[in-house]
Length: 243
Image 1: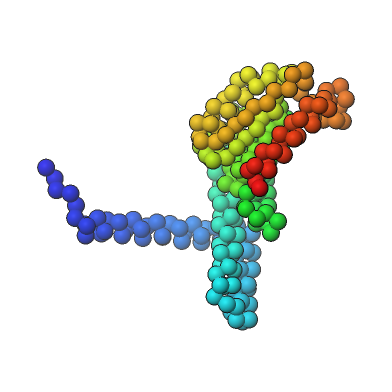
Image 2: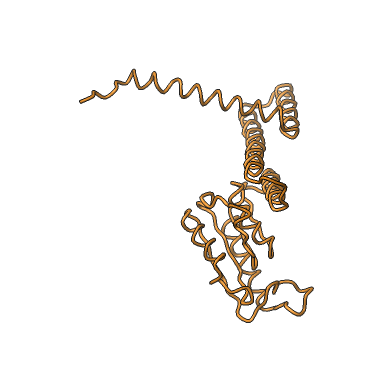
């Protein structure tokens, strides 16, 4: 029988791992500074802010608040850079959906950093293909915690979403009768995957409706009662998840 390693041996093994992790983290920061113009701008502004803070003699508490705010901005930029790099690896050629996903993730990072967004959490809503992108976006950004899709076509074979990122998040899908209701295979696939990841997914059916029933500029398909009901449910989700 092999004797268990003593504490000194365990510590000696952990130390190189910790150093390796710190080294990789440092290399990651350097890489982002070298390759991302926005990160260099954020870093330059942060340096100026800290210089001014020391010049004006801010208190320790104020300095801590500044450091937390600066760290949040820099981390959000690095997360967004990682998302873009992941999408670039997944997309072998230019895909408008991949570009749209990057734009949504970038917009979420921007919104989360605004003073009006007190929780750092964002919701997305989209219609038709935009509905698919809204649901997909929650797998790409930690800031997006609530997603709503109106009658989405759900081309998952092009998106390859990482559903595991839906843990603790929520989605609502509004389904028209003309698109096959909530029983459509793509809708059911999304629901199963989101719930398996630990997220919530609620499906709503609107009998007697066609695709684009929310679009009041298309009177041939617009359904006033269904549109009002769907919008109330959308706002209810955001109120419960975003505060």
